[in-house]
Amino acid sequence: MPERTISAQKDKIIYAVEQSGSAMQALALSLHQHPEVSFEEHRSAAELIQPLRQGGFTIETGTGGLETAFRASWKQGTGGPTIAFLAEYDALPGLGHACGHNLIGTASVAAALALKSAGIEFNGRIEVIGTPAEEDGGGKIIMVEKKVFDDVDAVMMFHPREKNMVVRGALACHDSTFKFYGKASHAASAPQLGISALDAVIHTFNGINALRQFFTDDVRVHGVITQGAALRISCRLLLKPNLSFALRRWRA
Image 1 (tube, one colour):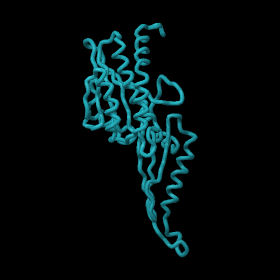
Image 2: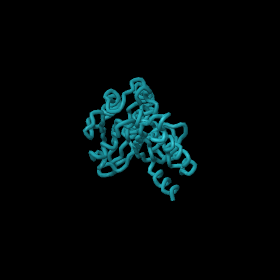
Image 3: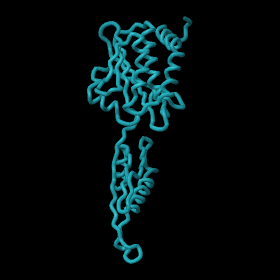
Image 4: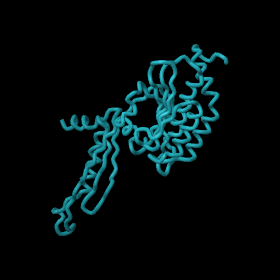
């Protein structure tokens, strides 16, 4: 095996990854061709589990009480950390794997198999944890609440993007729902007695848009009208945590 880096152990891992390249590419394409939405990823989970089982990993299914979640484990030596690679594999309704979860799941499987087959010096446990319902349903949140990650020292995964990044920040999301109630009146005879819920919604959106120039780079605000009626319009806004601070600062 030719030298690729200054580390013999890294060279072994690179070689192991290259050896499984064709099989992993076929796995990623198969997942892409058979997309499954959140909590329904039965076929996808089974496809990811198969090479791990063949590679000598101990398989647990139904992890955290979720039918399409799984945990694949392999331990070497005594003591040491538990490092988990997270596999996502659900798709978007009507779009398929637009976020590349077929690549995320496959990459985690490939990394774990490469570490095992490379024969490197390592004491600890390697796991692949299949985390369903990333797109809709919060699978990881459910698994955290079920203490799935309590014995894990570190988790790793990658997400496809148009550029390479070693570290990427994350944004938390907070849902807020606003309901606007109007009052009907005769538009010609007594317009002054009416209250327009639609105008209130429009002013709310315009007010938030006016604040955008003052938002910091880590703030995102997205709004959508979820329900409309003659007297009522419900407006659902997705607010980032920093928005409440921005609003308070603006009002001050």
